[in-house]
Picture 1 (tube, rainbow, N blue to C red):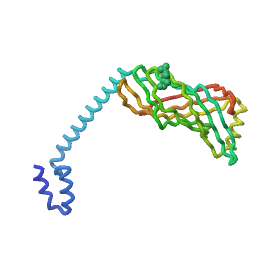
Picture 2: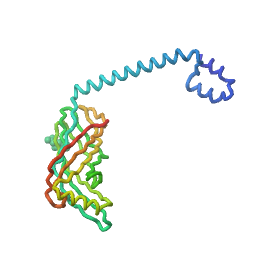
Picture 3: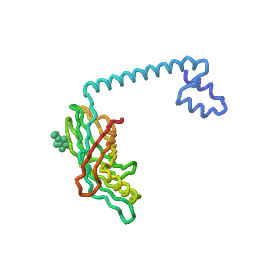
Picture 4: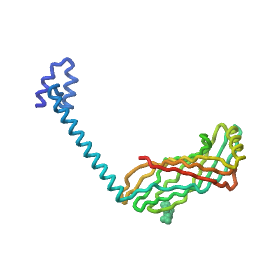
Amino acid sequence: MGEHTVKKIHPVPDGNIIKSLSHHLGPPQTKTKSGFSCCKCICWSLCALITLIIILGATIGILYIVFKPKVPRYSVDRLTISQLTLNLDLSLYARFNVQITAINPNKKIGIFYQKGSHLSVWYKNTNLCQGSLPIFYQGQLNKTVIHVALAGQNQYGRTLMAALQEQQQTGRIPLDLKVNVPVKIQLGNLKLIKVRVLGKCLLIVDRLSANYKISIKATSCKFRLKL
Ligand SMILES: *[C@@H]1O[C@H](CO)[C@@H](O)[C@H](O)[C@H]1NC(C)=O
């Protein structure tokens, strides 16, 4: 039947293209036929799609019940500054160290922290420094303390330094810590899903000086997972 239709098409002006297409795609349908088979086709696709969605939903549901996933918890415990200096070119060089506690509250889920993570510290939409988390595996119900070194250079050093010093007079400097970490989730023995941990912490610190025990007056963090 297929060959028959192809032959009919042959005399059409640009027949070569249509012919070669119809070899790949099967016979082109005439208008009277296509109404029915197109409807059937859409119907089948829809059925297949709905079945797929149901299977997917059921799978996610079962995984959810079996593994009871919980979003990992993080807290910023300490911030130290090893360097905050104006360079000769009037850029500001900053080196911070942050201590983060990561808690995996899951009983059946392990977390692989992967390369490509990005942590950055901001003062009022100005980036001060950035760094990344180490690559490591965090097992079930594990609590790990991580030290992250962040460094950065900002070209508007003088303005920034002046703003920071002025803010320091109030004894409350708001800093944003932004986190973007790719992780692989291990379900039982299956190493499966790749997600991103996205987070933002507002830290209120009393001072920004090197070699000074900075006290974090308040922190509020929000974390979420992105597929
Ligand atoms: C938690 O995980 C870290 C990193 O894998 C490991 O060094 C540490 O020993 C673990 N802690 C416990 C209590 O298992």
